Amino acid sequence: MKIIDEDLITTDPIAFLSNEDVEVSVLRLDKIHPVVSGNKWFKLRYYIQEALEQQKRTIVTYGGAYSNHIVATAAACRIHRLKSKGIIRGEAPKQYGHTLQEAASYGMEFCFLPRSDFKMKKLPENFITAEDYLINEGGYGDKGAAGAGTIAYDKDKFDIVCCAAGTGTMMAGLINSKRTHTKILGFSVLKNNFSIENEIRSLLLNPLEDINIYHDFHFGGYAKRSPELIDFMNMFYSVTRIPTDFVYTGKLFFGLYQLLKSRQFKAGSRILVIHSGGLQGNLSLPKGTLIY
Ligand SMILES: *Cc1c(COP(=O)(O)O)cnc(C)c1O
Image (cartoon, rainbow, N blue to C red; front, side, top):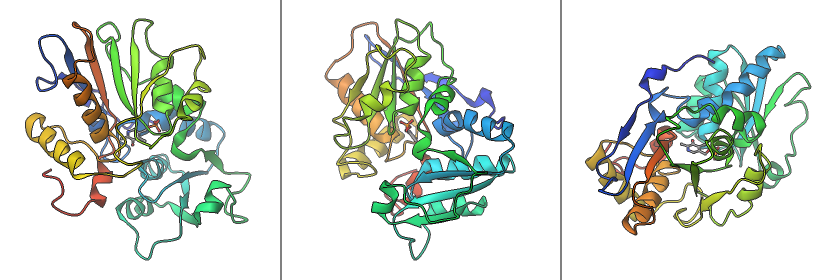
């Protein structure tokens, strides 16, 4: 899936987060594509490739009504002339939110499942056929991790890489592709989602790797937010001109900022933060919430 211009991926040190001891840089994956932005492009690439190799015509996947994965899958399928179907958690809304509208504009068909059925993956008959290519919710799986492992950065330079973690697929890929000296730090955006460690471990090439995840920066849970988070995101934008999203990267930068303030990193650390995109999610916020 060649839709990105790799030149757009920049790694700029950010003065605001750096100090005399620690240098922090950001990998701007949010810039690679307006829709299939950030980590989703990487996580989807090998699934799409396999679907094309198997000459599938339709991709089916799962997600919530605000899921970046749903939009990214719909857009990626459109680019590759594949049909897409989304199985969406919850009852059909009276009016589609931005995410569903956009996915529908790329031709995605939806099937809405009440939460209990969604959990059990209880599907209506005939929505999926044996001919369809299935991708897990959030792109979780070995192929997703392998794709995330192709996120490129200067491996000689950085000793710490920070990322947001939803399913943990991106984090697993980063662990699989890191150098021995590098530590990957994950910031979980779900509340008390302690099973993520096992979910990540089952995607690791070396299951003995350390898994370092912070569970303190979820702001109440997935897609939950507080005025403190929004204030931080606005402040962070006004100082750095880097927009973040309230579901993933806002929490990631907030968490890292706290760790930096309390001097959790060894002097001389060179830290890379993966800006994994997701900015489309901010369109579900009331107008005026963010200054960008
Ligand atoms: C989906 C997403 C993530 C989480 O990726 P996982 O591989 O599920 O952990 C992080 N950041 C953004 C912006 C995302 O859209």
